[in-house]
Image (cartoon, rainbow, N blue to C red; front, side, top):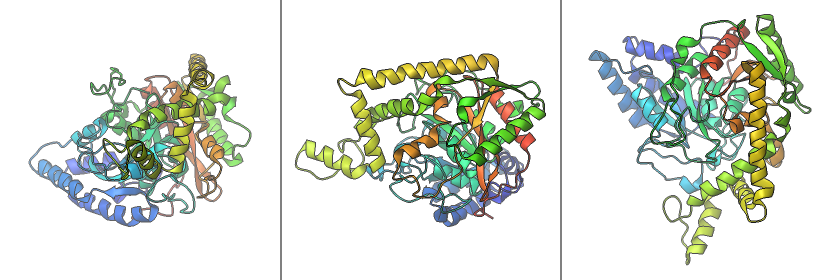
Length: 493
């Protein structure tokens, strides 16, 4: 990729940190420029729900003070970062793009945010998203549409669309998103950037507002694989505040990125090249696979036979867990409260006013599949199929190190194109939801432009806690595919 495309002043996150630590760049100057871009281009894209100008400037000035005094502010010294608006930030609104949490200000930081701040990162904004992370286009936000910087009449993907648009347009070099069924990788693909979902348990979920607790993970969107590896290595690791975080060691991923493709066996599943897939996506992905094979990567066929059940399985499990998690928004403890004469009326009116149509749809579906008489037929059966999906991957990883697939079946689609057809929208996650169901790490990297200069992503899936191997392979593939001139028409200058 071109080195001057992404990030404030055309720099990657690691380049910014090096320049700030070396005194060649003032964090405050960069922060001010980023805030201006967030208020200008960011507003045009609808990328942000809030810009944290005062706290960001105070943080940047403190980093400059520490540099002058001879201290090392950390590996992200002065790097401007954006945080998806379902990840808690102390003293700043965390709305989940929902009316029901429109004025919610957490008294604490999510663990991932705490670790970014400790590493010298500067949190400049909270990004727009599909309400409660329920969507694949960022059209379900209660506040504003988010637009793709490649074409403002098209979606950026979802649910982390604001984070993807902010990175792709160069307002920030990197951002945090969250994943439940592909909500980092799919918008990364549609916006022409890198998006990584770690192994379930690799990153603490403390402070991530819950959608589906057995699927949710915080992920990273960045300009390139090395920046994504840097930031994931900072936020990863066991957290006593999250009982699901794994006590697995975290390696310095960036230092492991050297190497070539000749030692890697890539599995190619036929089940991910399906009828109805955009032919240009298939052409670009298969072209990338051929180049990987030509560079010495060993390509072997693998089978993931239960993939065809992934979408119904995902939408049964995710909605069931959402129904339970979102029951807490009752107008009693926090968030929106609609004036009412009785408790039952308040509960009904608050939830009707506070939740959008897609969230209500998923709550009703989840409540139905958990109800008496339907639990065994739907939810329990979906959990059994989830086990079969995991076993498919276990078998595939006996034959391969990394699995190659498309990230999304289509490039970015037009705003409003799928809003009246929920099933079509849900199928946007057809290639990504399996990694969430199996708890596997996966990454999307750009592999070219379809007609209309719309980005297409290539997905690499690794085995559990094999982020080092995944990053190493992704960096080698990224280097192989080379510069694609992937600069969107709307980019910060």
